[in-house]
Image (tube, rainbow, N blue to C red; front, side, top):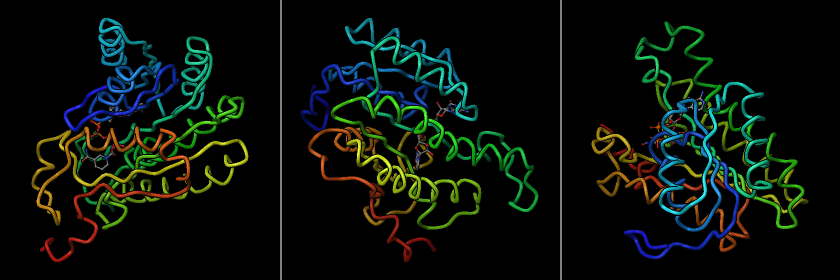
Length: 257
Ligand SMILES: NC(=O)c1ccc[n+]([C@@H]2O[C@H](COP(=O)([O-])OP(=O)(O)OC[C@H]3O[C@@H](n4cnc5c(N)ncnc54)[C@H](O)[C@@H]3O)[C@@H](O)[C@H]2O)c1
């Protein structure tokens, strides 16, 4: 498959589950995996959007199903994994893109000490608990595969720099610990786990103004193709580690004034 950054690898018949597939990088990686031959289960709480995505992928000759999935709810996640197994016979990769700032989702920008408990709970659930639940649900499937599987956690630059989005930054820091624990637990079964930590990414135009060393935000496909590399056998020796793709923002403190 060709992308604007050159050829990306083939994933023929690899079975991938993507959470947060309605928008942004989750949506893009579903299209890219499908174009590279993978069998895609697109999960999101926004069912209409993932249904449209799956239809577009199938119309273009790929294979995808859409499942309404609420990552706050274990049963919903288990149902998504069951649907993927029924349709495609198993799971090779799990990509946990669901996430986001609770303040933006609730359009409630109260300072931390005035935030409603539900907002804090959403922040932790969607950014950390969902990935924990999804990993638990796919593990038995990946353990059945002779080749194991790969679990990708998506962190955030906010866990590296600190942020007043306290529930977001702390949950994204938790993803790094989750990935280490999954790497230890999964290694005997050939299951790798990798955390990818984006800096500003142009899924939203305002990310362009965030200071970085290189002076630019990343295009979404830079992140998605990095995640795909981490899933591929080219990354067979990478597990338990976290990888910044942040245009140098984590060491851009002098620029933050
Ligand atoms: N865009 C950036 O600059 C940036 C920077 C750092 C980290 N990230 C992380 O990357 C990931 C993707 O970001 P993006 O900007 O590409 O996408 P996005 O924020 O536009 O989309 C997030 C998706 O998560 C879904 N979602 C929300 N609640 C859900 C729930 N309860 N159950 C299932 N799905 C749910 C949304 O419907 C949406 O489709 C997020 O985890 C985000 O925190 C993004």
